[in-house]
Length: 218
Ligand code: DX5
Ligand code: ZN
Image 1: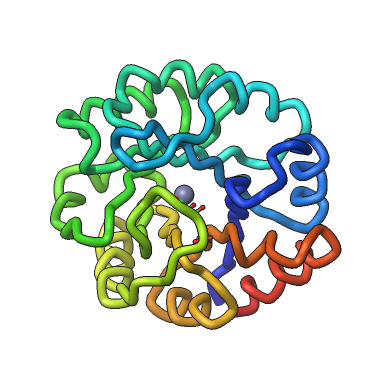
Image 2: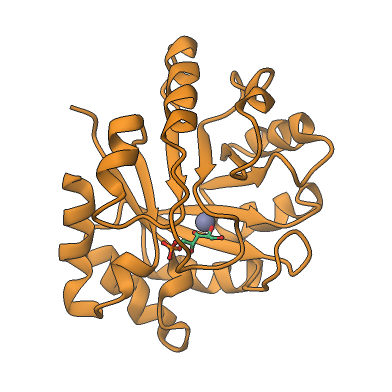
């Protein structure tokens, strides 16, 4: 059985209490802390950048999984690495020089991820599979939490087959509209890291651990 990891998206937490929210989500059993960085240009929303991530860093030892929805991404990679990111994921659509940006992330000893919007074909992975540690299949159009899951199980299965062909241990992450209903579908299709914002945070701190566990069990 695959080990399923849950990456709660802090986009849905109480931003006025970031420190406590981080500690609660850590205690609740999060595997990765998913941090959604938006620039109001690549996506129609703005969130936070390196200083906020740096301020969060001392409050948990969990893996910081930084999802960059910014264009360009390349010029900010050093800043996110310095701020304490462990995984840096860039969008295939956001940077003309995806290969160079991934190389740069690897040169900083960080894990490199590549994200694909719902309409982006998996063929963009053709020449970068040997460099990536994570492939993120977006199951909503990025920009906002709380959107409905777009059924892309065939695409997830296609990425799983590509990962298998490399023989390497690459995370297959799915992000957007993950709930107790959609989690089993994406797990069945081959995902092993599930990002979830709304579902984990919606019922308050007393339920974080249960929600994470439910998603994990599919
Ligand atoms: C969307 C973000 C997601 C989002 C997920 O652009 O990348 O990480 O926060 O939120 P839910 O789980 O509410 O769909
Ligand atoms: Zn995300």
